[in-house]
Amino acid sequence: MTHLFEHELEGLREILLTMGSQAESAVSRAVKAFLTRDDELARQVEADDSLLDQLEIEVDDLSISLLAQAPLATHLRLTTIAMKVSQNLERVGDEATKIARRTLDLNSEPPLKALPDIAAMGALATSMLKGALDAFVTGDIGLARATIQRDTTMDSANRQIHRDLVQCMLADSGTITRCLNVMVIAKSLERIADHATNVAEEIIFLTEGRDVRHAHMKDPASPGINQMHSHET
Image (tube, rainbow, N blue to C red):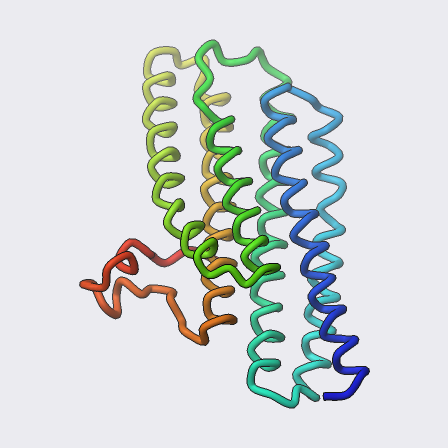
């Protein structure tokens, strides 16, 4: 392996870490903007999304260059997974931007009297994303698996918030627009958790060479694995 290849491979890792940090920050700031009704912060989240878009392009360009010269199968695996991880992180940024935009819409109206627990969903989504990124940095398969398993909690939280908001709309038709905006925010957080899960699954493949996506369909009796399910990308 040449010195230039090693340098470019390390550069790829650095870009991914920068993307991860930016994506994590975008989610945290978007949720904070929603909870504090901060228009300026919401607009900053929206404006900063272009950085993740640019970093994804850089990852793709560098990965394609590395694929042409990768001397080992492990290097091929890393570069192809890097593109998948960057795609998921870019989509996390898109969901954070969606939260920011819905926050701006909500802030133009009075706050809901009974707001569902978006704070808990936001904390879980951010924690899952951090867990997946830490697993990437450290190669900690246990952390990656723990991140995947937490996704069922996020799915349940989203369903509960949906039910709560439906009841709110039924009780007061004047809240419909606001409740629908909050539903979109909750769904975005659930999708962020899906993307974190996708990243964790890629880390397991990178480290073990084993594809755990849709694993419950391959071996329903496998302990632990049958709780892993497919996620949108």
